[in-house]
Amino acid sequence: MFIAEIEFRGRITRQKAAEYLPALDFVQRSRKARGLILTIDSGGGDANATEILYNKITEISNVKPVYAYVESMAASGAYWMACAAGKIYCMRTSLVGSIGVISMMPNVSGMLRKIGVEVSVMKVGDHKDMLSPFRAMDQGERERYQVLLNDIFEAFRSEVAKRRKLSDEEMARVATGEVFTPSAAKEMKLVDGVLPYDQIVKDMASGLNIKAKRRKIPPQRTFVQRLIGTEFIGGAIREAMDSMLDFQ
Image 1 (spheres, helix red, strand yellow):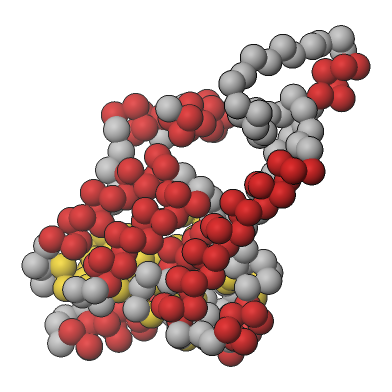
Image 2: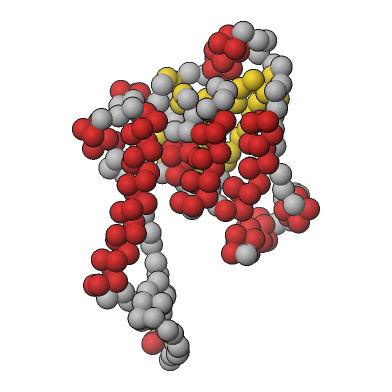
């Protein structure tokens, strides 16, 4: 019998979700994995990937204890993911929260005009190029897009409220898009405690009545991903390849 440990660091992407799902599936199926401690150090990322991971972690939390442990940060989507755990703990120097939604789209039309570049667009559907970087949104499109962001935010807000058992008044205090210190996060019920990692391992083992034996469960990466993660490949190349994989 052991306590499974999964570490999630960096931006939440669809590619990363695909890497971590097999590890989470293993923990869910394994009878020897009596509980899961999910270490998180992330500022968030893709909303769809976040929800996929959140749903899977919630499934595990329904059948065995799951603790989330925040290292330096669990912000935005990373905090949404952490809320799938039965308990959330953090370090004394962690940052927690950023409950909100943001979307930024560049508009390079002015720059292109200066260098004499014109972009021809052919489309079917008035708003098919609404998110194009080659023109500004009109007011109607901004309003439509704001509705989409509001819907994503409401899904985020409602799951945090449900999992952390927060009233509407309490949610209004925390759903401001800002990050909180550990003491403030605990006072607002965003975390359950500020403890060293070894202590939460002992607490989980005690609750399960087993020895505090741990087993790290790594994400599943493809051969290409393992190759570009080696030390001789430069960081810029790894970043470019990650972007290509995400796009695909």
